Amino acid sequence: ILFSSFSFGANAYSVDEEDASIESYYLYNFENDLVMAEKDIDKVISSSSTVKIMTVCVALESDIPMNTVITITQSMISGISGRFMGLRVGDKLTFEDLLYATVCASFNDAAQALALTISPSLEHFVDKMNQKAKELGMLSTTYADVTGIASEENKTTVSDLIKLARYMSQNEEFLKISSTKSHKLSVMATCDYTTISNRSSLLTSYKGISNFNSGSSGENGYSS
Image (cartoon, rainbow, N blue to C red; front, side, top):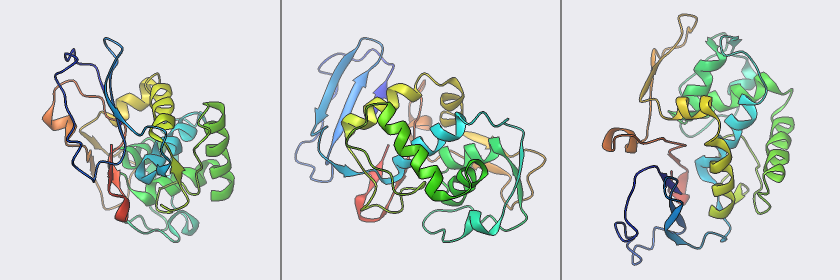
């Protein structure tokens, strides 16, 4: 799913229909309200790492101050797999640091720490995610975790992701975070990382791009 603010012509972009790895897509130009290309946008697919967009959506709407210092607990890093930043019990970061680590770097331990900062359990937080999906009319979407690792249980459609992307495109804080190329962690941070770099190659390849999420999960491949 790709959104653009560039004034491309209607025939300026094409997709290789022979590429079997491209299961579903949607290319839309906000500036002139033009759908440039799409394929199987109502087909149910794995949410993959786009799950983190909803994780951050719920986190931002919790109204926790950005400078709130979070101390990492065992439950925040328990069971973490896939891509993670290596947080340890006792590490301190701000709420803002965790947001950047989740969105820009797609770190799973940061996403789980965010969730458990807001909710007493991951299950409770996931319930919030599914409730928000219903509010946005994402009727084919089901979230099972806060990271996207449970790829067979996290389900969505490109059509639903369009609704979420439109909603989050109105959130200035989210756009600022997701479109930042690198973020220096606050002076309060005690983890091994000092700077969070954005995984999206779009930000360095094209001027004026606003990113949403870049990630991958196992056999489900990449998502943007």
